Length: 415
View 1 (cartoon, rainbow, N blue to C red):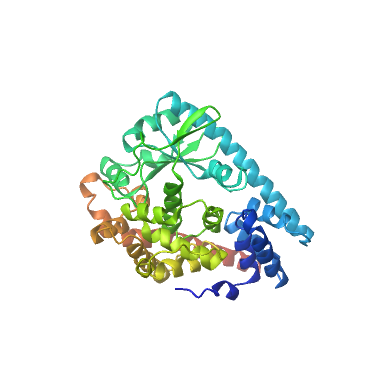
View 2: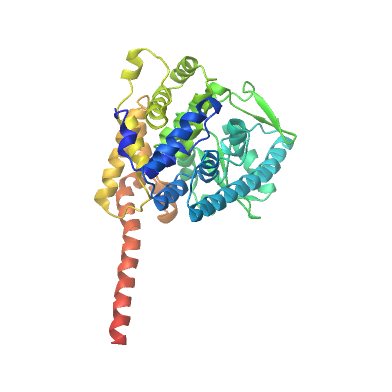
């Protein structure tokens, strides 16, 4: 496990980014303000901080957290950049809410139960402000048996499926439904994209996570939709962030806010998580919240914490530090990253059979699109996937080399 002083080894800009990735409740505000001031007094590289804010998608939260610190001195150009990014984030949230209202009304008219995931409504729930959390798209979940009806309903109000889906053969569609968990839709009139889920990445194919007639409901803008209980939402947010290696600090900020509010019975949450094989993501995020935000961990029995592999904390901390998303064109770097991802997922989801992990590694919808093979040769995809990867990565390298040759020839001709 990382040392509790791990944060002191990071740059002041990173420490400030973490400190401003949430808005602490009143009883924690003094501690948050002191953490912000301590990071600033260490000497901030403001350009690094702005890049981190953009990378972790926290512009409105960062600006709001900095503004409420007394005697906070921010360089004028930095303040202007943060204010503009915050305003953009809020406008995006308002646009998403407008389109979400239309979608919920259409689904309600067609009597399709729907669960709203994350987004501006979560921001409203956590902060009383729908514009604080950055969300680029809309995430909804319907029961698997309602997917076709929901897809038709969305198309009637201007949403279109990704064209790549139209090219899939019957066996490829079957594989998509088995190994993926959502479909992407794009709004024809310039609205936000939408992800329609029928399960989650940590579910097994036979799982039915939600019983639609038992979930609590809520109402917004005259639309009725399903919500999660407080415990279910904490488990969902923990597992969602864990499967994405906690790459965005905004996901941790959500849970830091929930934890600091003191309204969650963590023993009940752990008991519920154990029923659905999600206790490790829950324990992992609690350890991360202590390391990053100083939020104390709940008291569980010692043998529970002993079950948490160090990798489930170490890898997310490394992921948070990475400044940019890099396209890996080197085969050895790709293999190394894949091995780390495989080991991480094996420890995150030990309940999955090893065959299931291998099947997921061998699956790639990108292969279906770029290298179409008739259904009677579908069995060849897993065997050929390394070859397909090399071909895909080779294309940009060949294009770059060809452009370099042409540039050299033009320079030679000019001489």
